[in-house]
Length: 463
Image 1 (tube, rainbow, N blue to C red):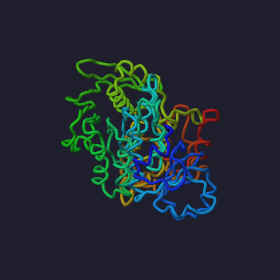
Image 2: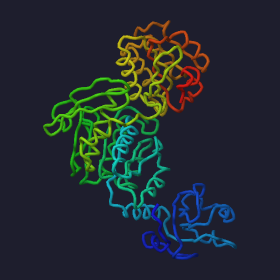
Image 3: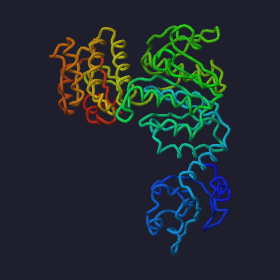
Image 4: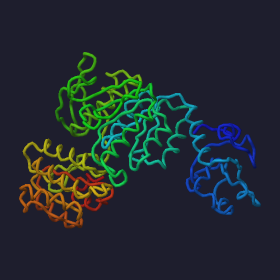
């Protein structure tokens, strides 16, 4: 964070200094006292206004912004106190002020799948010549936004922020904090229906990125995704760049092939053809890579330079990461997160990578689908059969619906197994695989599959 003083923020917050010095430095900012890590932290008393004054004495001395200053005016109060009339407005005034200090490109990435990969690819490519601020791994909740914002300082050249939709309003909230000028839509599939209610509501919330983007900015769209093609972009006055396999796009993917540990692909733009490669398997990885290249070019990086840099990018942990399983099988670890779209993509990779070898899918449940849970798991049973999986192991009662549907569609019931403990999975798995088998482990962090991994991944190749 850029070091500020109390004097610097009094005007933007429309605040009154009740106690303390105008020259006191501010070196951090948080929304909750439990987040305080150091002295001279600015704390917005948004949630703990009824915390007793003596409780605040446990924390290192800092600056409190509050609409109830008498609470902090007891004996031995070491805190500087700023009074504001409206706490919520004061918080957003600070966000507006701090974001306004920096004239840097900010890239916002949204989509059902691929957000984290695209964000990491862009950050990696830019890091060769620029210092970037970005979301950490998949920690993209609203609670982290202020921390990421104040991570921008005088040394920051660009920011790349992952923007999720878990509940309505999430995306507009994040856009309000970071004010992106470049927006990327990777894809829009099924996810987070528990809080959004319907697919239509979920798509509507994803589309909020268009509203939150700088109206003269750049919008990057996966034109092969029907839901993205149907977005209303009529109000957007900036530049729209499209990518995909179809004709008429700005960046057309013309060839995709598997290589050792990754993908090769060719795409064309402005009459020129480019060859590129990246680590990580699957057609969806190519789409992610092209989106990242477009964003980097929009920031000002030469496209050939970005392609060269992309070639050395390494995929994220537990994102279709290759491991050596027991009995020498090839295991695809895709256990970071799961939704119907990513599960379908993973099953497609399993089929394409196997090239006729035996395939085994170990699948867990998908959360946050609300009343659509049963329907979506049954649809995955369709994908299991469509991708000709030879054996299926489900590790959760909800995931069992995948197997039941696959059997209904003709899969041999003797090749579908319901195993609800790590040792059950291990016992069945050991009987099924050999060195010629290709295995997909598709779950999410909610499934807590660490014990399963320890049992089925060869010692020495475990995470």
